[in-house]
Length: 171
Image (cartoon, rainbow, N blue to C red; front, side, top):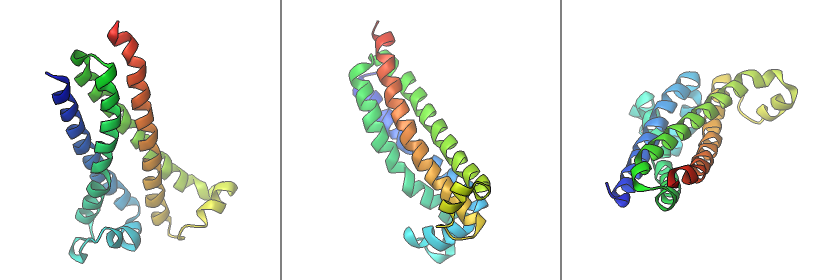
């Protein structure tokens, strides 16, 4: 398969995976803190009142995430198109996509853990005091922040992986 077709396919898959991740992530964060959605996200995304539930949370997740797949995909797979031979592009691309999603998930779970343990750690408790007192709100908000941090780190790790793989794949 030609490189441009592979790159287009990988970017499309990245958009779908990122959107699905966002929708699924919001199902978990809605479970741990629906107040975050009712107080902030439903209004922010213009979700109609009849969808102020899990469907609305999934829509928010999709809308907030799919474009990140395009953004990261263009950067990561653009680099890969220059550095990686065509025969390795698709499997390596899918591998780094899985790696980025894994790191993003770790970031989300790290945010959740921080929200759960943070009130018992004085330095963190001071920072958490800036958020509304509802523990569920804090858990969902920090899960979202953790996902953003994990996504950025996952993208950087994907770029680094492509960069490192160029030597062995071009040998």
